[in-house]
Length: 152
Image (cartoon, rainbow, N blue to C red; front, side):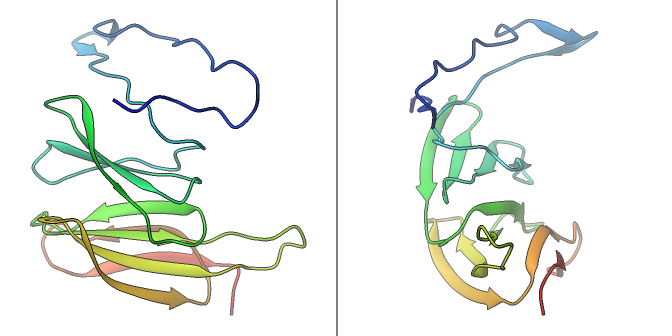
């Protein structure tokens, strides 16, 4: 399994909980996944409930197999931090959105990517002219909505 690599020279923080520790009645911590080199922005479950997608400021998405507790794929195509991921209702497509600002608060390149989940190949990449805060597929159709702001 990949290991945490902190950006700073400080030691990584200790885990605040232990595996199998009860969080709330009936809820237990099942795993701690490590591998990104920067902050994870959001996490999304696959429709089947087996896989997690973790987008990060390190410009990668890690796909985690929750049954085996390991990263099965690292996706990289974005030129900026990845803000969010969403799975199509049938699980055949993963959509990711990215964007960032420079030191003068100017919008940098923002993108939407579509990944085919059977082989994790990038199918399409589109530029967008506004910062994407989030993206969600409809749970019943193939419709996609992207919440954007701070742009043209």
